[in-house]
Length: 151
Image 1 (tube, rainbow, N blue to C red):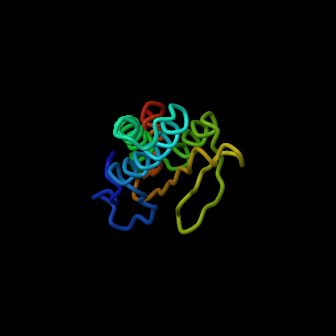
Image 2 (cartoon, one colour; image 1 turned 135 degrees about the horizontal axis):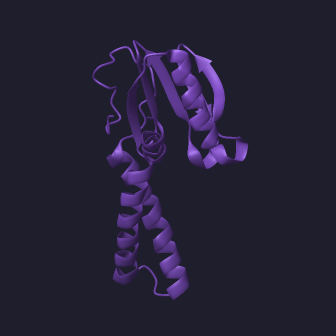
């Protein structure tokens, strides 16, 4: 398993999307949380753009950035297998339980996604199998769930 958005070191020919790492994802959620908290603080409490509303917004932004970065940054996971068909059948059963189905397959990369409405908030899971190793890439929360479910 690799926490970084980089390609795993054992597989130089992977073509999976790498996505943003923890820092960039955290910054994204921090910025959004600060803006929302600042607007809500000024409108709700009627205190204007003062130091208090700024401090509240920064605190909310810090929490939002840490949580957003932790759950939503891109992670990869490598799973060794001996029989490709058996592994894919087992993986697809697990993904179906999570609400995912095979959407597309091209250049050896399988893309799994949820139905139309749920996919807007959950992202995709990418799979590439080569040389007896399956590499999955997705949001950290999905990779952590798969780590618990895949033997």
